[in-house]
Image (tube, one colour):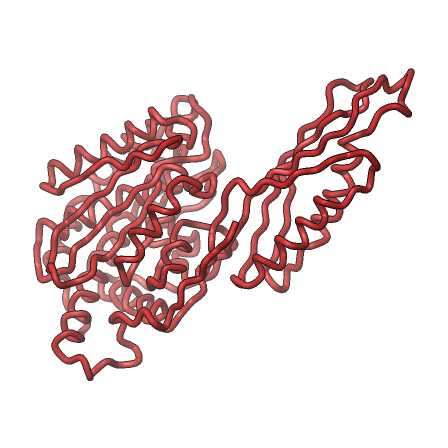
Length: 416
């Protein structure tokens, strides 16, 4: 492969900045929190209309109990395994947020709920697929897979993501590029849990001895859970939400807590879950009963030889476009971890550069939309060239060649 001059796909994308901003504004104007299935359907419908205009086939993905996703296919060489492009349609924001904080552009940044995480990434994937479709070339099949519950740990869509990933050697996730401009080459895994505690209600002033405080028990458990944090090893425990009690003068008969575990190494998941289960099973307050429920979670991205080579290919493509990019690890989780666990070389954070995700300050650097799309499209073209060369010369595989080697990334299976 050579450091080629801008290709047709790069030139096609060069003139789409305003169109990309227009579509981004339309998507941000739609409330699509994970529980808002109607809003998610509207985002999916707008994307489906865009793909229809580009001559790209789509099909709805219907999952019981969740919003509807979207699957997009650009046909390619039948003998080649598809390349997977990933995104999620849902955001963390409540209904009405799009009206309270409408899409806006101030200077060189665009603002609005979900503008970076990840409606900017949805726009980028849409235009990359349209560009590759329009300019053609000897490419493998391309699959765009858009899910609807990533923000709560993908409990419904995880099996579908894994099914898609089993058929690919390469997965690109268009989560926002880091504020530094880097892409994500490593992510931590996570487990989301709910702890429920039962006590016994009693009048706090008249008959407090008859009561059993679920809140008292929860307080002990919170201290013990937080003590499991091991920052040096990349392990964090956070109790982020608590509820409990009936009134100020009643011993609390119930209490709940939402718990977030983050881990860097796959083997740490089982060890930490065993420690958490032991804390939940222990009673500091006699008479209480506790229950632990796993509500969602993610697997980590651990760099492999194949994923490192894929990043190197992306970095050289970015340099050909005219910008420099590095790879970095992040404590956040994403669906790309499921693809990596299936053995695919995964590169995350290839969406437009942004920051402030999940907050009123969320933004996207609008001048990064086109270059990041160009870099991804060019990477896919170069990847196809590498795969084609590998197929033509199967004995000439180079250590830095990102052609398929699924045996180097054994699947990391999770048990719940």
